[in-house]
Length: 272
Image 1 (cartoon, helix red, strand yellow):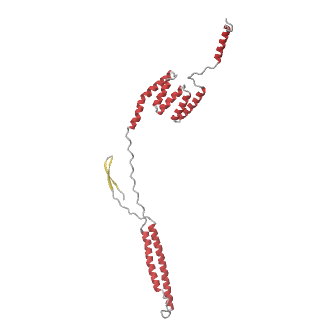
Image 2: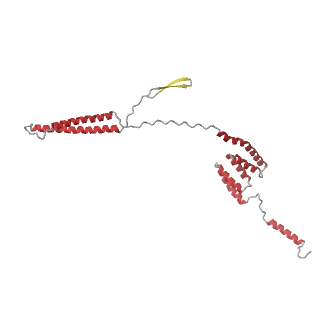
Image 3: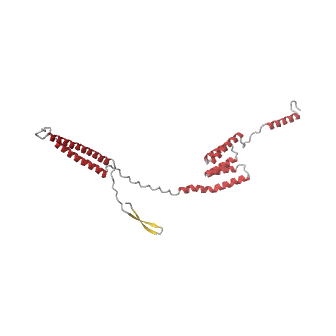
């Protein structure tokens, strides 16, 4: 034995120590295992995806499931749910892609059979689903709804109503004007002149009578002129403040034939 070389006992002790140390050292994680923190984060995305799915927000659920799959790619339930939601949305190609990924994972025999049957079903239904949009596009467009004919606009209302009230007010104004002019002329005629001389042109009583008569006639003329202005104002107001009367045009009856369940019939319609 060379000096400085370990003995057999020393070699056995060294080997035993190496085994103990190797056993106590942590094993490195395998490539297909997911870190616990990523699993927890993926679980949060999955719960959010389930809440979105229950509310009908399928697109949002797909986004959450894809985020969870990125964190935990070995979770086969995430892949299966991605395929199912895409099928729910009608994305046949995406559903097939995820079902094919699911079929390559570590599945039980029942899961493998379910994946294979679903892939066969979608592959068989894909041509029919692709033909539906094209068939819908070939349908003739529905004719546009008929445009209703615009109703004729009513004729503009014009002022100038001539009726019994207008004619009455105008008649009163005319009579009052005639009376006022006549009474004014009589008052002017009966008024004594400024050169009246008592005893020569008449007595004092004659002067007083002529003066009173002329005064009464002048007052009557003023009242008549007042009635004229009032009547004229009333006639003007009644004429200008109300719309003109449009005479109604009488329409004759119209005849039309309409078939009935028990034979023909003649129907009379009209507006008077």
